[in-house]
Length: 153
Image 1 (tube, rainbow, N blue to C red):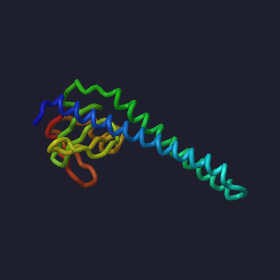
Image 2 (image 1 turned 180 degrees about the vertical axis):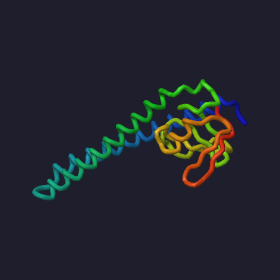
Image 3 (image 1 turned 45 degrees about the vertical axis):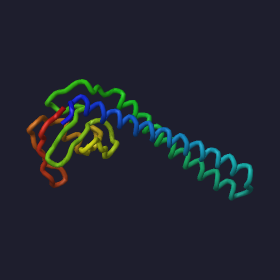
Image 4 (image 1 turned 90 degrees about the vertical axis):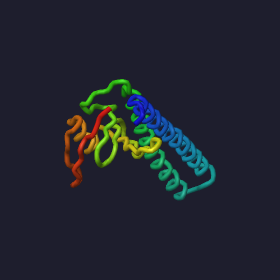
């Protein structure tokens, strides 16, 4: 196994990269949607014009909400310290269990790190809440599966 801080740093950097990628993508889509709405204004008339503008406005609002969430996610990631290590699970911990590995940081999803897979999860998620109350060698049940915490870094 790699150095524990190396694993944390790599996971953290991948999470930041994914968050940044989401932000960039959402900004591009938002700009395209706004451009399309502006073109709709120039080329349409009557009810069709109003319907097109209303749909573009709804899409813009949805994308703006998603962008705000992505920015919050990135900000939350910047608050995590990757240098601390304890056998008590906290935000920023990497948890190895008999059923999978978890990085308690933000709701990013599955991350492949060399030969191991990790699930970057939010501390507010159902399994994140369960994990935050545990330490090495503890066990818990989630969705009918029994998990044993093998190690925490």
